[in-house]
Length: 473
Ligand SMILES: Nc1ncnc2c1ncn2[C@@H]1O[C@H](COP(=O)(O)OP(=O)(O)OP(=O)(O)O)[C@@H](O)[C@H]1O
Ligand SMILES: [Mg+2]
Image (cartoon, rainbow, N blue to C red; front, side):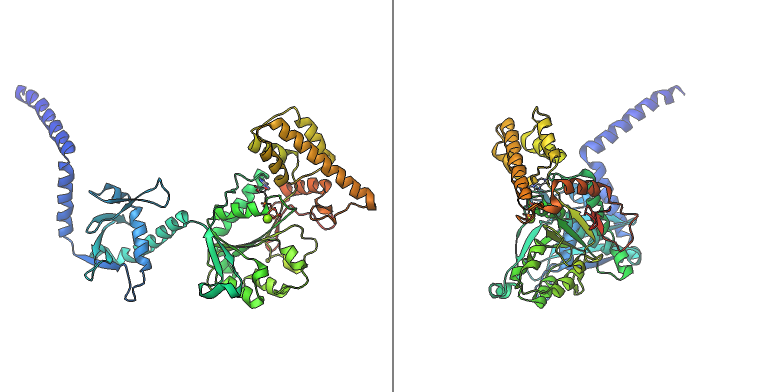
C-alpha cells in the first residue's frame, strides 16, 4: 500500500514528462501521421486526375477552380511546407501548393487528399484527387459540386470590377464591340448622401434579387431587375450606379446609344455581355428626345425586356434620366422598370451631411440662416454644394458663406424667371418645375414614405419617391 502511494506520484510525473516531450518535439505529430498512413494503407483508393490543359491546350476550368478551392483550405496553412506569393494587392500573401505536395480535406466525414504533380509531358501540372473507394459513390459528385460553388464564391469576392464601353462598328475590329478598363469609381453607398432608410431598402432589394434565381425560373421570367434613377443634374445618379456595381461586385456595361448603329446592333451588344453584370444607359430621356437616332423606341423596349437574353442572366439594368415626364409610358411600365428612385436637390439635412463630410463641421453659427434659406425654397444640387465646399475647404466659414450667396443668387435668378412670364420657368432646364423646392420637399417625403415593398402588387414597379402625375398621393 505504502509502495503504491509512492509509485503513483512518480507515474504521474513520468506521464507528464513524456507528454511534454511528445508535444515539444512533434513526436506526437509524427506518430499521428504514421497512424494515418497505416489506416490509409488498409483501404483501397481511387485516383482522379485534373489536368491543367485539355488536348487542345486550352486551360481546364476545373483545374483553375480546384486550385482556387485548395488555396482556401486551412490544411494548406498547416502543411509541412508550401509556396508563398504576393497577391494582386500589395499586402496580399497567397499560399500555393508546391509540386508533389499533398493536402488533406474532409467532406461529409470522408477524408480525401489532393496532390499537385507534374504531368508526364513537361511543364503542365495535374491535380490528383485520392479518395477511398468506399466513399466514392457517396461523396464524389457532391464534393466536386461543393468545390465549384466555393471556388465561384471566392472568385466573385475577389473579382476586380470592369467597366466596359461599347465602341462604334468601324473601330471594333476583331476585338468585339466592348472595350474594358478597371472600374475604380470611388463612390459607395457609404459615401453617398441620401436617406439611410432608402439606401438600406435598395441594398435589401439587390440582395433579394441575387438570391432569387429559382423564383425567376419558376415564373418563367428573365432573371433581371431594372432600376430607373431620375432627378436633376448633379444629384448623384451616376455615383449611385457606381455604388450599386461595387455593392454587387458586377461588371458595368455602359452603353453609349449614339455608338449603336441600329436595333439589331443593340441586341448584339446585349448578347456579348456576360451574366452577373450591370447594363447601364445614362441620360435615356435626352437620347429619346433626339430627332435623328439609329435606335428605335421598339428596339429599346425589346432591349429592356431582355427577350434576347440567351447567354447570361442575373443582370441588373439601370437607366438614368433627368426627368421622366416626357418619356413614353410604355418604357416605364412595370416589368420594364421595376424600381424608380428619385434623386432630389439638396435640402437642409442633406446640406448638413455634406458639411460634415466635406468640412468636418457638425454645427455652425451660420446653420440657422442656411436652414431658413433652404426652407425659403432656394435649392442647389449636392454636386454644386460639394464643389463650393471643396474649393473652400480650408475655411468652413467661408465655405458656408459661399453656399449662402450661391443659394441667394440661385433663388434671385429663379424668382426673376418666374415673374418674367407669370409661370415658373422650367425652360432653363433640367432643374425646373418638377424639381422646384416645393415639389422636391414633397417628393422627398414620399421618397421615404412610399416604399412598402411587401404591400405592393407583384407587377407594380417599386417607386422610391416619384410624384404622382395628379399629385394626389
Ligand atoms: N447625394 C450625393 N452625395 C454625395 N455626393 C454627391 C451626391 N450627389 C452628387 N454628388 C457629387 O456630385 C458629383 C456629380 O454627381 P453625379 O455625376 O453622380 O450626378 P448625376 O446625377 O449623375 O448628374 P448628371 O445628371 O449631370 O449626370 C459627384 O462627384 C458626386 O460625388
Ligand atoms: Mg450622371
